[in-house]
Length: 496
Image (cartoon, rainbow, N blue to C red; front, side, top):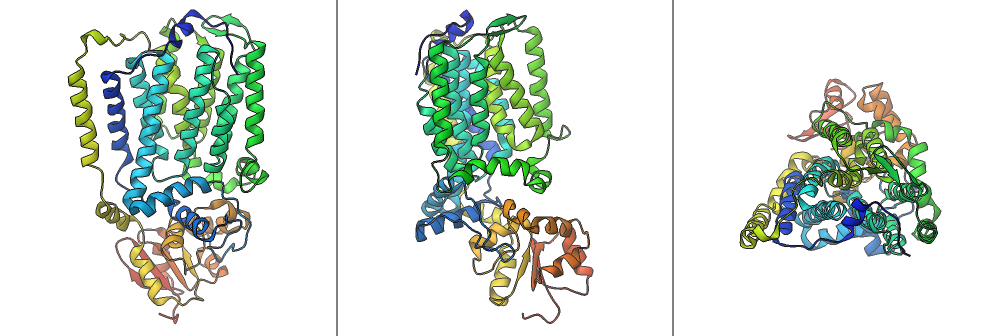
């Protein structure tokens, strides 16, 4: 799937792949350390726990979950688990190393993606120095998705796709046959594949035009190239249906966009960028850099580059969740515009110094990697271990526990005998109206009467939550357990 394409001289110049050397490895090590600082020392994510339980069921019972079996509010509701393959990876890490295994897997994946972004920028610009700054910015933009999260595997697939597409845009030749394989893995790892499909389409459409307009140019694909691209695109769409849930996985992103209104409106990662926060200021800095480079740089922008930047800015400004793919989209384009920076000069390099610095950086990361004890202590500060222990010792099998949204997954993994009221699988709870009721509860909108509709025997909420304060003042509930993290309330006269 390849042939020659007419491209501007500045693009042809970059098609010769540079050679790795100790200096490049040191730059990559710096990105690893910088990423490590943002990874934190925590695995206290609300989603990872029900992901582990899903994978455990698949491994031990040899079947994919197709309906909810963890809650008493929506039990039996059909459910699509489009992240089963990523769950298996985390479950394997858990079986191999427990909490430390989870941390190592997610931090290694995050660091690999960020180093891969550096390499992508370097290949796009041909200048490792020009690639470094956009890669640092990419790390800061991507922090929103750091953690033991399945979405990291989705963005790893996104990066792999971008390597193929950039090679095609740069030289007109690329292994397009790999793209359907990437999407085959992606559709079973995470539902973010739709972003990749849109980017793939943008690259194809960007090559349908020819012309030059001031600082923007367009070059058409040759008939052979266009045929190969369209064939790969069609094969990619077809292969999306190769998954345990069939068409339901393919249509799920559209279900999320058009049916799950409360999910998109209230879950933090679906919020628009806030320019008062640090990440908003970083995005503003990227916008400013793009404007300044557009005004000052002598190099022309391709239509595809402009379209990719516009799409990256749109998805990241609209939803914080998509800052990560936006960083991968924008960073290599910025690095091309920064190629006026001095090139690396191997003749004045000191290989021994670079090697020593790289080793020192890697030793620093290894020595400061948190152990199980540190991760457990962090988890104990954020998750309701004490409250769960109380419920396991006092609640009867028939009792209902109304839990905080962020505690649901942790209950599923650590106390499977206690059915949950809600967890972060927001979709099925929105379908049945449970999520709307939960929002009414936490907004103190007739909360006591809403709670009564679910007939809970116990309520498990964070100690400092407004709902907890309300329950302390209510005669309908009395406090039976509290610690520094969570509180358990029971109805007066309930079994205890």
